[in-house]
Each structure stands twice: as structure tokens, then as C-alpha cells.
Length: 129
Image 1 (tube, rainbow, N blue to C red):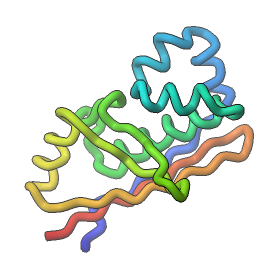
Image 2 (image 1 turned 90 degrees about the horizontal axis):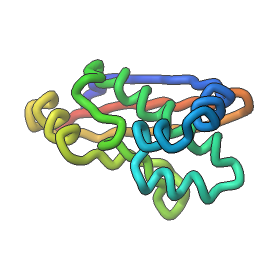
Image 3 (image 1 turned 90 degrees about the vertical axis):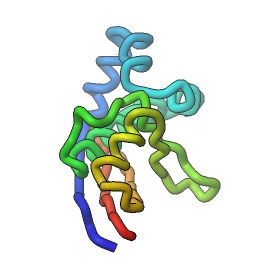
């Protein structure tokens, strides 16, 4: 395995809260998938949930170095049964990643955390044969 890229993003949770408060429907629908909206809206700490997912997408864009190749709406963060966050990439974004990696296999590791007023995400992208 080779490290293709590393990305980190930190978000002020208050900034996400303001964006949601200002125009909830527009902001959420522009940045998050329906699944992410459903999951985060159910949580008591829903703003932190949205903030971590926003940071995760930005960290991924930084790790691959090609933000315009990915769409916020085609990059989804889901937690597995043990709570570990994972990316699910679909559509044109997935096709663009495959082209970028020249059809090599790739794996993306994601770590999320928050401690008010901050949410942070770290991403490591690996490629292999």
C-alpha cells in the first residue's frame, strides 16, 4: 500500500450552526445526502454531527487534491455497526476517483472528533494493486 494523500479539516461548530439556522433546508440539501440529514437530525447533538461530516468531506477533498472531482452530495459518511465512520462514494465522484487512481484499488481511512467549539476530521487515502 502507498499513501496517496492525507487531509485534515477543522470546523467551528458555531459556523455550521449558523449556516443551518440561516437556511437549514438549502444548506443541508447542498452539502449532505438524504441519509446524512436523516441520521444527524435524529441526534441530540445534531449540529456536531453535521459539522463532523462537513469536516470529513473537506478533509477528503484535501487528501486527494482535486476538490472539483468530488461532489458533496456523492460523498457520504456512514458509521459501521461498531461506530467507525466510513466514506461511501457514488456516482460521478466514484468514477472520477477511479480515473484519478488509474483504476488502482484505494482505501480511505477516516477519523472524526469534536470538542466544542470544534469538529475535526482526518483522512488518509491509500492506493494499492
